[in-house]
Image 1 (spheres, rainbow, N blue to C red):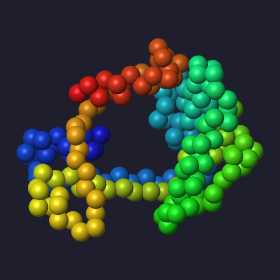
Image 2: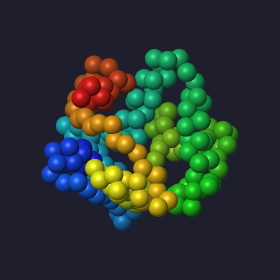
Image 3: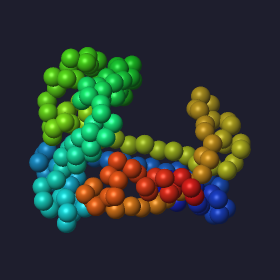
Image 4: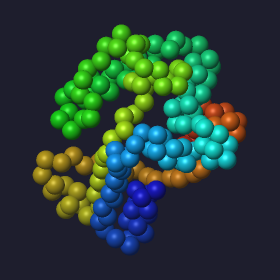
Length: 179
């Protein structure tokens, strides 16, 4: 949402340069408290208040995907293995240890079929992006890559997994791409 607001401020000529910053701190509380806090981002009435966690909701979606596309559980391994492989050469990465397919298949089950290597780690982080319409700033930032933001869109959908007509389809993404 912050990136979209910044984009709109540029498009409306309100500003010529905007800095968007996001920060997340998750390591300052105990795991059970963190899990309960994150559950409030789900549909509280239908999911969070009934004990659903992101791991259990993602497990539901992963199982639906396995059934719909007739794939094996092990077919998800390349996602985790690629992420860990990429992390080994990144000095700021959280988990820099390479993993094998055997490690993946033997990793702890969080909520069947989601394993710990399928889940994102609990960590702190921050990111920032500078948006500008000024060509002198966009081209003179030494050693930094720049990209062109082609557009921005926003939409919403039903939050509760069980209420979605097609749980594996991200209708809000499809709608926002049309904007």
